[in-house]
Length: 556
Image (cartoon, rainbow, N blue to C red; front, side):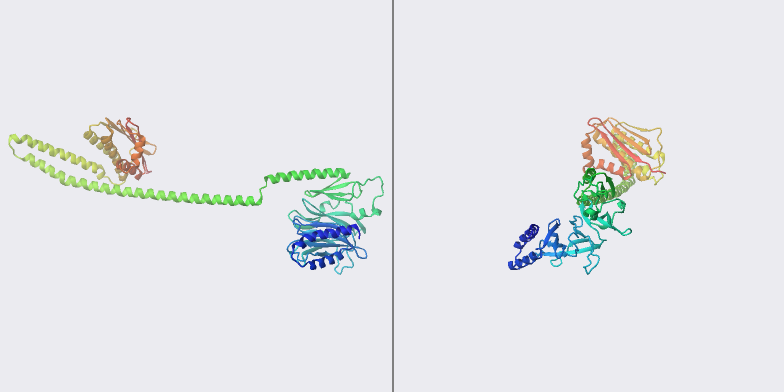
């Protein structure tokens, strides 16, 4: 037995042995299977071997001597489907020993490829020449699925690089009846595993040397000056195919990416160009990889962005809901304050009328009766004193009635305020304040002041705010003088109430505005908000206080 046969049988044994020992089968059955395979391979020679990425499938190309050399392709399945540890015969239609020249595995489609060069007239199924693709089925019976695409007879070699699977195929010149004068390039599949088996027409005019002429010395060029610096006429790199020209000294470099071929005077120069092309595309791919985000990261980023957008929408809806709630609460507060202030005004008006119509009238009658009494001279002084007290009571009660409901407000009708009314109300308040407290209070109206038409509600609330401000000056400020200034600023009325009293700290003032115990300050703020205005306090310790009222005017 020849050395190549012994080597082949040793390879088969090494492939089978580990899995045979690991499976719990009857050793006698394994021995019987091994004996059968050993007999089948006695006359075989290993010509090629390929394995898939995880070594679960091996494809073997052998030549065997059966009244002449014939090619065969075998499959050996490793793993759970390899119940019998046998090598399965996949293809045996070969007519000659060199029928199959290459066997490759594609990492892109996970398929094996091999080509049959010649038609076998003995085959009951014609057109056996062409490309074969083998894929694993995952079954212990018929473990390999074989697909065949017929091509014209001709020697071919397969190549796998970083751009896909390629084939260089000899073509027969049927028009001139010339046997395989040249070869052409076929792309079998791309890097995505897409199947083409398509001739590259872009380089069909290139004078690629054929395998058949290369292997037949009688067809070779006889020029002894040509130095053949190669062992074969087809080579490949990561991104190129190198093919010898028909002149047997020039070489073509086919760029698999740009789909173009260039002719160079020697293999050495062609190799350098192929090296440069590989370096260029490797550099481009590195740059692309640096900027290319993996698919799973892109998905995660999209999910993160969508989640972030949903969170923003949710946060926006929450904020909008809270704003609406606050607006509703503010509206409810304003409505509540309006109702309270309306009730207060009605009660004040009722109390004012009751005092004026009953108590004041009774005291006036009492004073008249006292004046009409005839008394001795010695009681005249007491009579006069009683009359003065009655008169003073009437004045005080009238002031109380005015403060409860000023006469100007009592006769006020909605949307019909005279230009004197607001001024007269403020004047009346100042006069009563000065008479009651003996604190001088100046009142100044800007000469460019445009007297507006105010609603009753607006006039009423401004009056109450100024009244409360003067009451605070009287009770708490220890002021020696005060002033009120009114003017227009843009489309608003500005009223400034100032005193030279002791003032207070800003922090204390802010605390009083928030406290429930200081109803006066809070009611001033609530009244201005009720009519769409605002109130501001400016003060510091021992430096008096200024109150600024702002009321935007409605367009006529």
